[in-house]
Image 1 (spheres, rainbow, N blue to C red):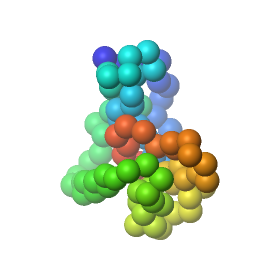
Image 2: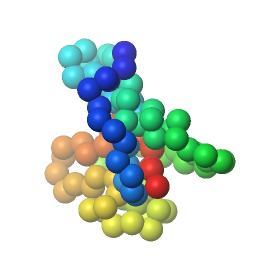
Image 3: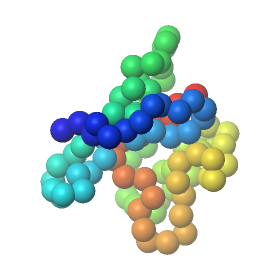
Length: 93
């Protein structure tokens, strides 16, 4: 399934979702056009970094630290039990 309601890819340094959980079916994933467009637009080599772990264990914070960005600029970091980042994301510059 591909999300087709995404707009043009905005430039700049920020995270883009590639795959998100389906809003209607709990066991399905949905491709996100914006993130796929970011991937297609990459010229040159890339360096995948994968961080996997239980929720609220600091994955987004770690990625922000590695990128040298604040939690407000980078991957969402929260102070509640609500999950901030679900699915598969890519950092666009």
